[in-house]
Amino acid sequence: MVRFMVFCLLALVWSTTEISGLRRGDFSKVVKFPVSSSSQFPRAVISKSLPPMDEFTLCSWLKLTSSEEREFVFFSYAVGNGGDSDEIMASVNRTTSTTELKIKIANQLARLSCATFTVGNFHKVCITWTSVKGRVQFYVDEDMCSAQVNGVAVGTQVRNGGTIVLGQDQDTVGGGFSSDQSYVGDLTQLNLFDELLDQDQIRRASTCLSKTFKYSPCCYQEDEISGNIISW
Image 1 (cartoon, rainbow, N blue to C red):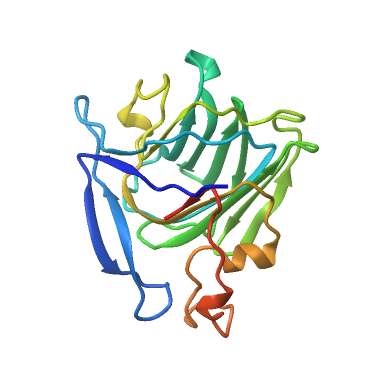
Image 2 (cartoon, rainbow, N blue to C red; image 1 turned 90 degrees about the vertical axis):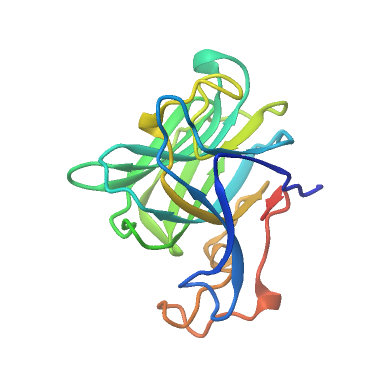
């Protein structure tokens, strides 16, 4: 499978910075998503489509910088039109009582409360899905969020031919953005695998954690794994 990471950056800040929580001394490219408006929708567009997939693992380091109580979409892959367009849509949802991770696959929703995800801090978020039983699992900093969700897009396959947008939800392919769903904050180390990673593999996906996190010692760089579909 060919990996790709061709970006079109629209009203975004691209920087190289040391990220607290990654291996000490490592530097990484970071996309900073400012607040959207009624006329400006900052986003990153990946120029190629995804292959058909009947399972996947999506991982990224996220730092949400807004304390608003609403949904923040960080990954959107749209195919088709209207209500049929949400092939993959991943987001963080903040309410008065909790923080949730959400994902739509073939327009079917899964959501779970993940209290360890906090505003203003980098967290490694991973989401897995398999069409067998439609099982979805959410991970924050390698720990699975409370439980798993079953029955999501059972027996289906992610379609190819769509468009990937980071930082905005696509109501139509390449458009239909809303500031009420826009992501505000930093995003780096995005990896997509066309397979179901286990918990040990998830710990090694993206750059390893430093010893300031609970998993110690930090794994060596040669132990890290990168997405075979998207690796950035």
